[in-house]
Image (tube, rainbow, N blue to C red; front, side, top):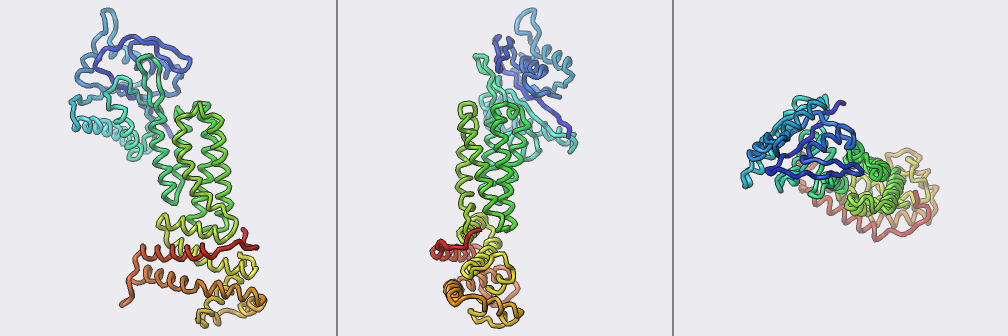
Length: 444
């Protein structure tokens, strides 16, 4: 996919003094930072190569824009157009409102949004829009407006941020890109922590790696482990969404290992990557969510899965997992392979028989009786005690589930809300958590 790269800069209302601007080891003396930034981009000192320069001008700034700072010197407008012609790029002048009121802020926001929308419509899906923003000579509120604008444009129009530059009075040029990226980190991490999908985090890591900030060597040393972690995390959440119970524990352990590699990298490069410190705090919350899913025993693992589903409103997956947990525990008590389909069915039907549903049991083939007859008296007693203790819970949860799914078409049946079904499932979870004890043969 091709790119349309836009350098957005702001012309202030005062004539700046000559300054020694510094970016890494590079030093450039100039009155106007825009000229220095473009020259650095031309020479790949800053690895951003614009196709267009958008110059934001208020009424006052427009007067200075075309006026020479002193006799015998060229105006900023003349110099910038000459440099743009030399680089083969376009310049677009964007008028801004300078009234000191709330409405003025929103009018200016709308101006930039409409300009970006025009670019997106012009390109359709043939190219992506990438932005570098210079906030040096802007309004005091402009950095906040830019952060909000970039977040909005990313969500609505798919625009990507590569760089935010700010040249302070001493001449040091600051890279503020991490502030905007932190907004994205927080948003995607929140989605992954509260929802069943971590693909947004995986995508964001790729985007940051492709941005100018991501090309910094110290940042890349962390972005590699972060990409591995985000991929593992997304695979774990996918296993949970698809109720692949047998994959969850190993996927969770692999994710924790990748997370620990990120933490080690943070510790090794802590002084160089302070902008990643807020992210490291969020990763602690991620660890708290994943660690219960590393369980090697079936009952605590599946109970953790049920809670994960309920926290995300996935009550049908929670119900399915709870039913499977019930049969899995019976398999463990019977000392049989939890993946043996015939034996799982036999123990399920044993539970039906104990609840007086003889029809369900007698409908099964002869293997049901053969499998049950293989169990010792002690195993049958343990299974019966477990099933008798939780039969009432299973019945109640099943009734609520049927009422929730099919009650609309049945007259004179009580209506069940999702919240009531969820509360009943949580009650069942608490009963099972009280019951669980370390048992041999219960490991994955």
